[in-house]
Image (tube, rainbow, N blue to C red; front, side):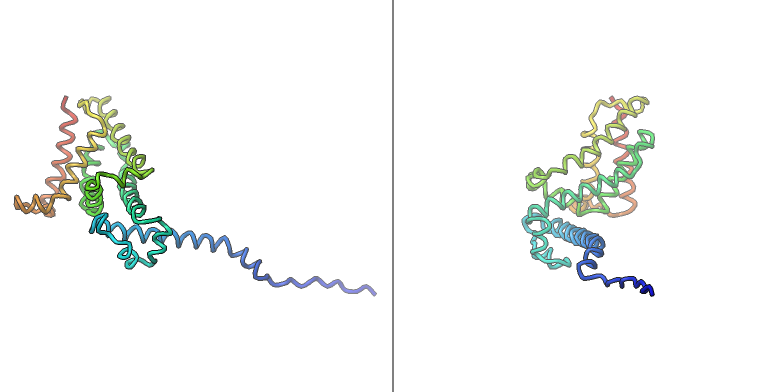
Length: 234
């Protein structure tokens, strides 16, 4: 009589097997949690540095308003200065990413400049913390920003964009001014920046409400009109 062949029972997965099977999912979750924690720290640190400046900001205060600890902040960023630089890098990257999404390359040159000027004006008003952070870093003569390995390259994108618009405008006979893209960017930034950085002092001295929707619309158009007019002048 031939003995029946019995298939070996499938052994339940041991702890190590289950650990290996779950590791990719756990690694993805760990990465997500790290990104979420880092983003939370940056968000809170942005408000702290914008409100109190670099010298007045406190890591303890940032830790108290996040879902992490002071020790973890140092783990992710290394120290106060490194965190401050990371905040600056994040803020500049945000505005550059928004500019890249405007689709300026598809617009006629004059319309592209107007769109960029209006966007810059609106962005500064919607993000006063960005304006304050830039002002804070100017007080420190950009000594922290100078240590960043990425800020210069990140901001180079907007200069390339404006340069391409100017070249198209000259080819089409719309722009004739012999100005460089970085100078146009400076002028645009200065006019829009001032409207937020000096709204309290200028508004108080001359009794103008810079937060008035009607006045903001007037100044927004004035900024764009002024820049376009200059680009049409020799």
